Image (cartoon, rainbow, N blue to C red; front, side, top):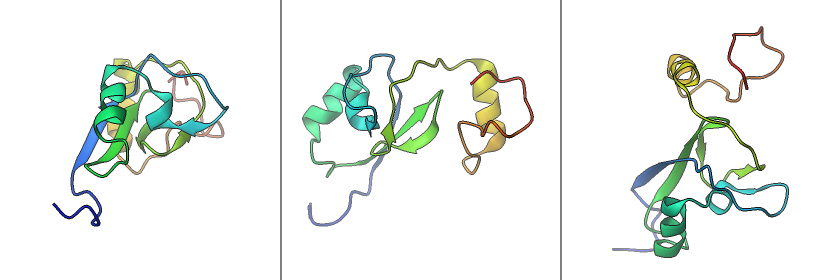
Length: 105
């Protein structure tokens, strides 16, 4: 395998309730600290084997290199339905300037 080429695999992980403390903003791949994220950091520390994305109840679908704050949000059916209805092009979290759609952010 030619390691000079970008990875052709996409790994999508859910966010983790366990998060690491640290600076106010840090990459999601470093912030999340559940078992899958620990395994990922151990087996692919340089990000050469796969591109990694995260599905977060608070942030939606993002690249795992996106810097994030510490937060606590849980996925529920209403939030999942709203994300699905909006598709990948919908900004998440929803801007506070939009009318209240009944989804607690």
